[in-house]
Image: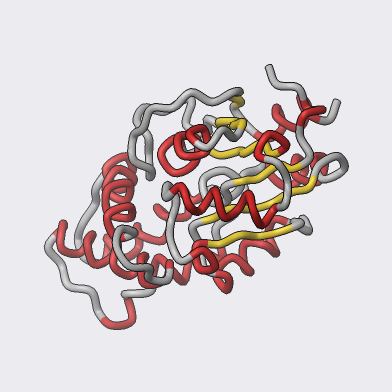
Length: 231
């Protein structure tokens, strides 16, 4: 267990933790793939996304919109079809419509009564604005890959975020679904972490690469976390 009195700030990954990005990814890809005559399983699509996206996020910074366009090109190459010009933005255009998990909004509102809430996300500022409307919470700060010019799991994203938050690392509790993008690099910097195991009833690591890390606390959803931190 963790002591909620130690923390002043809760930092959150967004996509996969607050927003159900796996459902969003599948809903965006399915109609396109059907038109191309491709019908892979959900697990196959998510596993491929977990390989393609991190590979595209290496090297010099490119916007997340460009990353998602490149990921879609990789899907096309993998399955042997050609994207039309108006299809390249299918994934990126869908992000604003991706929905929060059913427990997200109420839990964030409860947590906001006690803690400062911050988002640390691999996203562009403009793309996050659509998600922000669905999350229905006024975050104290939103720290994006666009502002940091690079993508998690790069550790400098977390070191820069700590500076910007303006609190000791020991006063920040980082909450995320991805062991690869969040829990592992945050732990290396000494941040306390909560793993929201959104895939507890499913095999594999889904749309994120597999990774090994030991969080300070594991919960199945944000309702559980909010109940623990704000009795």
